[in-house]
Length: 326
Ligand SMILES: Cc1cc2nc3c(=O)[nH]c(=O)nc-3n(C[C@H](O)[C@H](O)[C@H](O)COP(=O)(O)OP(=O)(O)OC[C@H]3O[C@@H](n4cnc5c(N)ncnc54)[C@H](O)[C@@H]3O)c2cc1C
Image 1 (cartoon, rainbow, N blue to C red):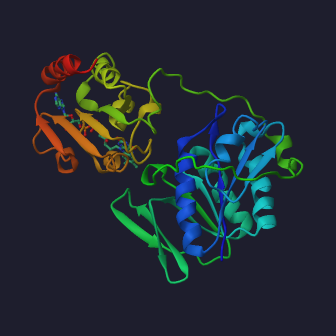
Image 2 (cartoon, helix red, strand yellow):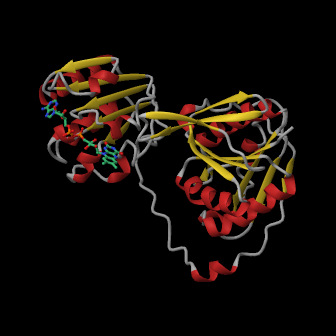
Image 3 (cartoon, rainbow, N blue to C red):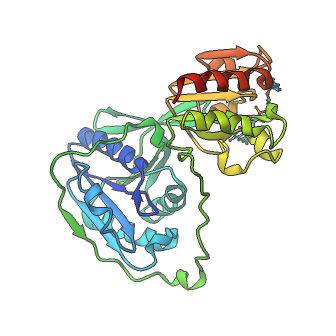
């Protein structure tokens, strides 16, 4: 029997959907191990999130509250999580593969002398062990790995796991003791958190994404992408080439070194479909591509393709959709 601990992702007082995805992953792993899963949250004051977290079917919800924890500093979070894992005897600890997860979890694995599987996209049971599937070589190969250490440290790609829906009943809530801040914090200063503000949905969680590439040719032309995204209530995405050319801020980059997205609809406009871009969007449910080059690799992964000049068809498409979308 082995139990699983999920570290919740909270931003601006909101429990992120990626937490629910990590919880559904944890519930599968716990069932393989014949154990239970618990959820741990860290923050200055978690009174606003406790109810949401306690409706996710967990064995218990652990709250670590102390001034400064909202800063998400890995140096501050890590010893608190380490202590909770040791006290609870958890076998598997999981977090979304967010910037916090990527920052905290490798350090945690080191401290626990544990093996780690990052960016996990699938899970199965193999004898008494859990097998984790993770992309390698920019998504060209999927590796299946098992972790041999007593504690298994895992980050998951949230887009690959359904979000756990709220359940009836409430999990018991426990406050955990927060160890004193480690000495290293005396040498680190939190300066601030700059969040990109947008009226559009969060790129990583949007159900529609309209992305533009180098084919857009300018920042001004990206307004064509924005117009279609707004019409569909979607987010705007971009390729690295478009970002590097200064057409759009790198917050919008989709791909291996950008955001990983898996919307219901992904519209790819004037982008070639390079491996590193496709690595970040290939799990989208429906992919529509517009490219003037019929040989463009994006057509190999798209469900619908239009070989056309984007400057002609994109405004026409937007006008036609306007007629049917209120
Ligand atoms: C380590 C590494 C990491 C990387 N990470 C990422 C990443 O995270 N995300 C990412 O996107 N890239 C990433 N890249 C870059 C990637 O390899 C490509 O260079 C990039 O994705 C290409 O962007 P693009 O498709 O916009 O440009 P291009 O490849 O230049 O494609 C432009 C496309 O627009 C089409 N086009 C041009 N004009 C029109 C028109 N008028 N109408 C219709 N179509 C038109 C062309 O036919 C062409 O297919 C990475 C590269 C490396 C080496």
